[in-house]
Structures are given as C-alpha cells and as structure tokens.
Image (tube, rainbow, N blue to C red; front, side, top):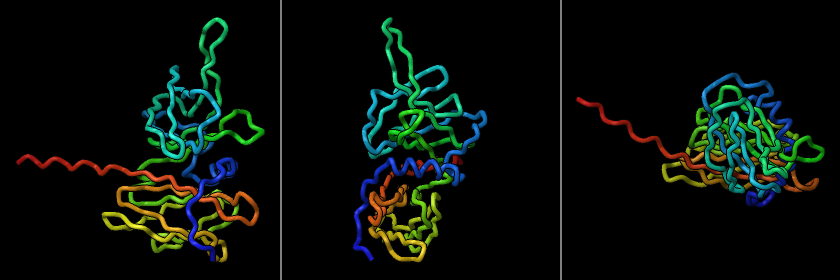
Length: 247
C-alpha cells in the first residue's frame, strides 16, 4: 500500500480525452441530443490553467458576453437565456474596425437541468476547435451539499472507499457519496482501490455539511505511476430561515 498521498494537479488534457468517452457513458454528463426549450440556465466554468487565448465570450442569443475565469476554481454563475449549447468565441476586429466573433469551443446543455458546470481546456490535437469543453449537471438535486462526487476518468474499474462506504466506480462513471461529517466538518479517509481491492491511492478529504466537493480521478502521467487526483471544492450557503407564520 502506498503512503498517504496529497491530491495532485492532473494533466487535464488526459481528463478531456477521457471525458469525451465519459460523456457518452454516463447520463449525468452532457447528452448528445439537443435540449428542449426551457427557462434560463445558469452555468459556471472551470479551467485548471489560464487559456492560451485572449478574452473569451459566450453567446446568448444574439449577444456575446465576456467570461472571467479563476484557474483551479469555479467561475461565477452566468445566465444563458437562449440556445441549447454553450458556444465560446473570441473577438476579432477587421481592417474596417468591425468586430466579429470566431467560434473556439462548443458543448451541448444537459437536457432538463437548470445549472451546469463546464470544464474547459485546450483541445488535444487533432481537433476542429481550439477548446475542448464538457459539462455536467451541477444542480443541487443531483449534487447536494454534504456530499462528494467522484468522477472516474480512467479506463479501469476502481473501488472508492470514503465515508464508511466502498463504492465500485466503473471506468468513465461517476458516483455521489454522502460525507456524514459533524456540523463543524472533519477529515475522512479517502482510498482508491483497483478492481481487486488493492489500495493504489490514499489521503484524507475535509468534508462539511454545507460543502460539496468534486473529485476527478485521472490516469497516471506515466505508465506505472500514481493516479492523478484533483479536488474541486465548493461551499453552498445555507437556505435562509422561513419567516414565522403570522398569527
């Protein structure tokens, strides 16, 4: 068994390559069919490193609106009132001074969701567009506070041991596990085993009743190396108390 390992920064290009298969294999991730007409969607974005592009805009109907990224963290929430896809573009100004927008990345919305998280990275070559994007349903109904969400971007069956539970996590699948920590939070052992139960990664994760953390599990950078594990935490403010009933 390996010694306890810190959570490391994975090569996200490997996550993007695995993510394309994961999207098709897991219904929580983006589906290929267009989403039906629905009310406005909110979305946030995640980049691990600064993108090698100038300012990026997203299209909402006929408008192009700027995005701001915070590498390694979720961006703020943005509204998307029109469209069935997230389309990202960069602004180009012609010799006549007229501005146009060039498409650099595109991903469909998950049908029926009201909130999404889009993970963005330079696309592995060859690619039609310079940005690879995939999205997950980020609604609190599927990923509530007090849980951890594990995403297996490897090609192998893994066994996730966390919160007193052992969960079999097939290749390119995800699972949500309740942390069951006290009010002030606490550290919980987190182990990843191979298909035979042998521990291949071990550390501790800090859970909170108001927190939800997504854990990305990617293949090793080199054959025979350690799994690459990346944590994306988020705190959800508690709902305000309901007003007392009027006598």
